[in-house]
Length: 94
Image (cartoon, rainbow, N blue to C red; front, side, top):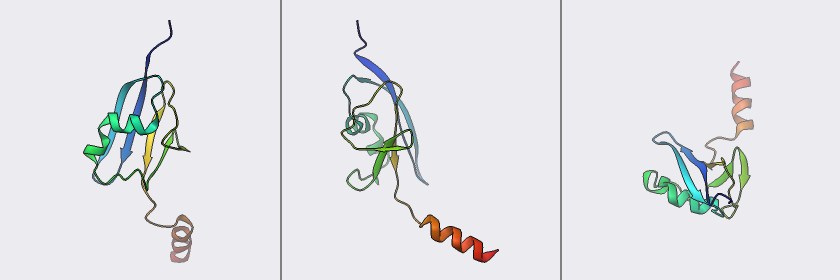
């Protein structure tokens, strides 16, 4: 008999909130459904899934991606600085 549920994690971090929740979800659960089930949207109302990107273990995915056993769903905040410009500024300062 195949498992009808499996374990995943949902995580999000900002300056104000660090969220990591382990969940048991039904087979066929999508990233969007897992985020809703986790409660992260209530704890971090600044999350806007229409703007922010999501992924599984640092690989970008879409909200309709179906999850697998032991996946870690990550919600990515927008960059506040361009990494190339930040490196250039540090190099000039040295």
